[in-house]
Length: 310
Image 1 (cartoon, rainbow, N blue to C red):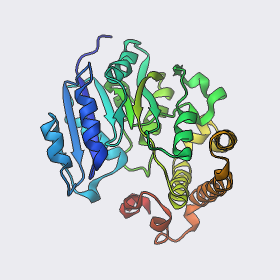
Image 2: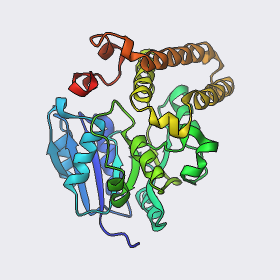
Image 3: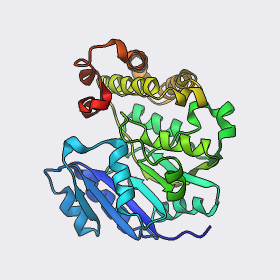
Image 4: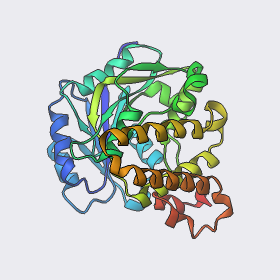
C-alpha cells in the first residue's frame, strides 16, 4: 500500500524552554511532513507564535476543552487529507535527523496500523526518569500482534503518543481516539487495532529524547489515574492481562538499576513504588471515593470536570 501524505500533530500548552529545541529538531528532519499542526490549549507564552514561525498551522482551544483523546482526534480530523498521522508531545526532541523517516518506514509493511519510536532520557534526567525510559524502550525493534498477548500481556498494546504514528485507515477502523479517557488514549487505540488484526511496530532505530522526573506525589497521582483507567476500561486487562505482572518486572529492574547507578536512592525507590501501588489500588476502587476527592488524587484533574467522569 503506497504511502501518501504525512501529518505531524503536536498538542501544546506553554511549551517552555524545550519547545524551541523540539521545533529545531523537527526542522532538521530529512523527511518533512506535508502538514504540520499544533493544537494549543491557551498558552500564555510564545508557544503558538513559535509554532507558526516554524511552519505549523495552529488551532487554539480553551484549556478546559483539552482532552488527551478528543484533542488528538480533533487533530486527525483537521488533516483529513493525510494518510499517516505522526504525534509528538511538546517536550519530545527528535534525536537524529532521520528519526521521523525511520518511524514512517514502519508503514511500508501493510499490516502495520501504528508505530512508536524509542524514547531516550533527556541529558538532565535523574535515575528514576532514566530507568523508566530504558525499561520501557529497549534497543531491539519488534512487531506486536494480538498473538503476543500471552507473552507480553498489557505491554502488547503499549505505545506512547510522545513519539508515535498511526495509519489513518487503522485508526478509523478502531473508532479513532477515545473521546474522554483520563490517559492512555494511545494504548486504547492500539489495543483496538490489535483486535482488528493490525500490528503495532516498535522502531528502536527511531529515537526521541523524552523523560520525566516525577516527584513522589506525582508518581502516586499518575498511578491513581492508571487504576482509574483500568477500572473504567476493564476490557483492556481482560483482553491482554493484568498490570501487576508488568509492574513487578519494572520494580525489580529499577532496584537493580539503582544498585548500579545510585544505591543511595534505593530507600526512595522502595517508597516510590509503594506509593505507586497505593495510588493504583485507590484508582481501581475510585467508585467508592467521593467525587470531590478524586481531582486531588489525580494528575489529570480536568478529567473530573467532565460529566462522563461521574
